[in-house]
Image (cartoon, rainbow, N blue to C red; front, top):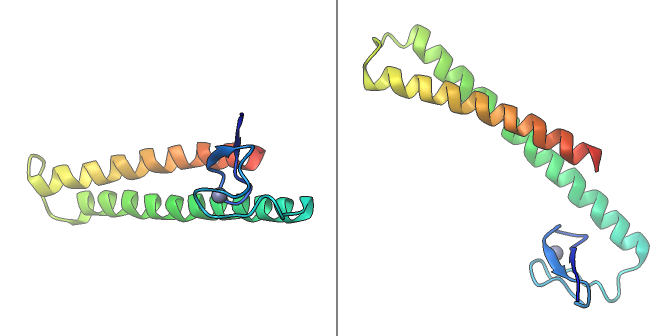
Amino acid sequence: MAITACPSCSKPISDKAKSCSHCGFNLGSATAEDIDRKAKFAHYKAMHKLQNQSMFAILLFLMGFGFIYWGGSEPGEVQYNLSIAAAVIGFAWYAVNRVRLALVKRT
Ligand SMILES: [Zn+2]
């Protein structure tokens, strides 16, 4: 028994399984074309999700950045530290998403 990725949801499943235990995708009756279409759709969905996350990460970064400049809080205040945290997390998240997006695109 080997583990393979479900063509629909990309989660690990047994290659002997007739249907996916995660999303219920029926592997037994699916044609190669079905599986191909499902895989393309899953790929598109994964890319779309990452793009949305990237947008959110940029927003978080800009919000944190904007707050540092126009929030009127002084260094050392909780609000100031939160702004820096938001900017740093937003930037790191965006960077991670760029890498993940590149990896998804390559497959
Ligand atoms: Zn599945």
